[in-house]
Length: 304
Ligand code: RIB
Image (cartoon, rainbow, N blue to C red; front, top):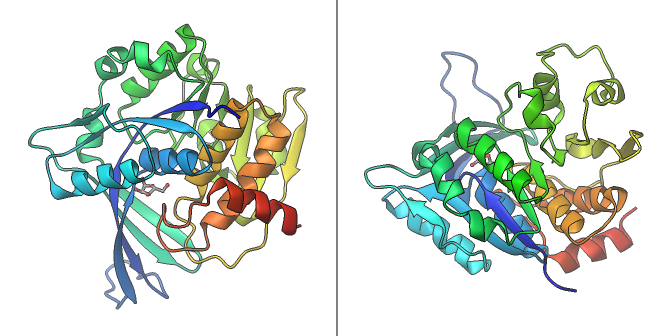
């Protein structure tokens, strides 16, 4: 099968990961257990996921002028991701994410650094290259104006966009109308709908209110989605030994993008993405556990 061409526009971070058995309270100092650093950033993670699952991937993003940038570019190069459109921003530091892993979950603070230097004009200047893509994959760790410009351009070029609205903000309706599929998690969906912490509705009810095509990830419970006929469906999660859930959503998005750009139906693509993201949580670090295509296919055959 011909490899689909996916352009990922987004963030590139170095993840500083602290593992701890308990979360400190406000004003409290505790000892954690392990510190590690990894290449990350939702954009770079999704690029790695797509490449491992069989796509030809081009990354558009920004790094700073530091040794972290070299690490990030080397990690993408190793996966065969095209990095020639990644801009190095003078006098800027590369994006950093401080991540606390505790109790099978994570908390993340991102310092955007160079990621915030990816501008709408950078995207417009790459129109010819983007026109060659089968799919554009976006998240929200770059300036909002850049996300908007990328969606508008992809629409003009008739290229479907998957938008992973993370970190979430309430988005204008005209933007939602231009996105092929939105992929929030349960918290992000409530923000997209302007509901804040209001959790008195089922996911099916929340998704029902969303006007367009949507796939909501729900951690170990899998994904809920609205298909082409407006039907709400649930694809249950796969049971695995979770070590670190960081990057599970990115693996999900990458897998969904690869399958859909190969022409698979949404049901099949969601099933594949749920399996890929389950496998990704079995190792520490966002990119370390991202599976190869053959791993996912084998896992789907053997795991109910
Ligand atoms: O989705 C996980 C990613 O979010 C991490 O790699 C971190 O860099 C933040 O961008």
